[in-house]
Image (cartoon, rainbow, N blue to C red; front, side):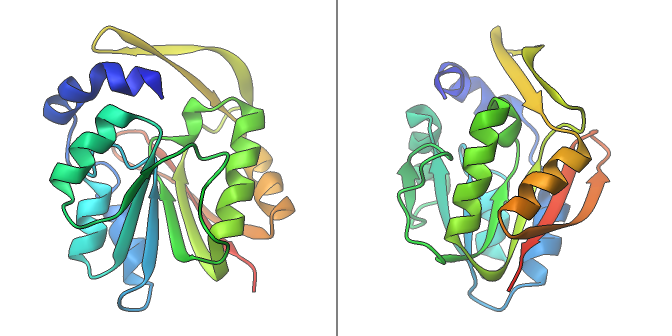
Length: 193
């Protein structure tokens, strides 16, 4: 995403290191040792990839921003990463026990979110977990804009029921929806066996 290329340096110094950590650790705590976890929209690797690897999982990062991936390589040395978009993952099917998409999906218009969820389902193995953040209001207008370091970011989402329907269509069950102290809405889903 071009916008993240523009703010990569600022993001590394200004963003917190706590958002999503508890939820990611809860997820990886339910996985077998050495499980493969995809950090979709990995950014610079902090905090999600770093805590997933520290918890004993094998992680991989995917991001569309070259600038964020350059920082990922430094922050997550030895962890494989690819530049790609969530709607077309260059990965084999059934490759991961979990996918985490923190702070990414809501940047995509609804049609692209549907394609991304289809790709997540494709790369998840049977019984695999999917943790993601997004809004909880049906909004494909692109009029919700928040600036970060002078760069405008557009936000899109479905309602909780909309996400439940899309996940179901792709063979996944929505298990839980929660909101953290920073007002991030987390969705936890599992691919049916």
